Length: 282
Ligand code: AMP
Image 1: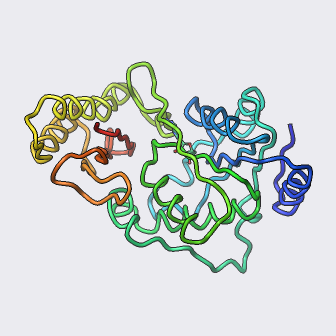
Image 2: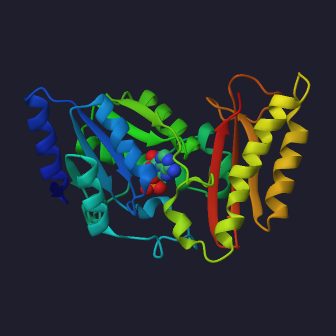
């Protein structure tokens, strides 16, 4: 298994594989891999001959006071997980390989980044869009695979690729959950004691919303669904950051459920672990 840290070496490898007629898929991650990440490798293999997994904890997408320094890092374990899942190459640059001292460019997303996580994490998606564009330029993939767990991120990257005519196809991959329903996340590692149980409020409130969508009379007003979702989260002791039903393409808040509706929630568990979850409603 090759591990590259140098963008130049990485680009040369991809060019050589393209000359051989191979297709390449990129799975961008921040490491601390779990089964959710590894499922993206499986998805990538459905599309491309070769799979690159990038591991880079991107400082540009963390705001002041966020968990950049505490973010879990486990490069050796990640490398063996990636190898056993059958990816072909790991790109794990150092911060200075990505941002040298003269770096000064930022890609800015407007409408899609304005609500939900974007409203609560100013600058976050500009940081994501910038690093993902750099990773695309360095690794030169034909496909890039992102999890639907970060639904707003997936929508933004899809738009970015279209807006900037980046020659690759963005693939979304389903959320992988623990057996009790908690969406897998690197940040689940921060949950201590009872917080692990409290964290179930996200998936449980979403399950209740889906039940209501099934049972309520049509046309369905979202207000009472959202009230119930927020009540479930608050009753568990977590703090709701947002709970909305939005159009899955525009991410604009909806008042009526339709075939494009998706419920998205974010909550803080134990005052310190920020988790997100979502589901298509129909
Ligand atoms: P991260 O390392 O958190 O930046 O995530 C890297 C990629 O893994 C992103 O495309 C995420 O959406 C995806 N991902 C994270 N958790 C899950 C999950 N539980 N199921 C599917 N994909 C996931």
